[in-house]
Length: 82
Image (cartoon, rainbow, N blue to C red):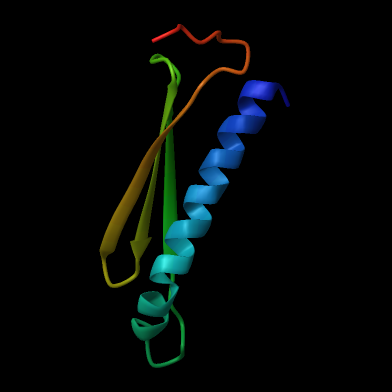
């Protein structure tokens, strides 16, 4: 996996982890009578912009939605002085 993909997946995994930790208790509370509950994650990567835009959405079975968006610069992209 290239440097860009490694950085992007790392950022996306961190967002998934943050959403999972933030909504796990709510998911457990939404469990049905058999103790079954679910969380669904959707990841959207937009490389047509610089830096890459990543949106990670989380849905709990009782329909609680949340999202995190972040930017990841290409590792070979130089920085312009301010």
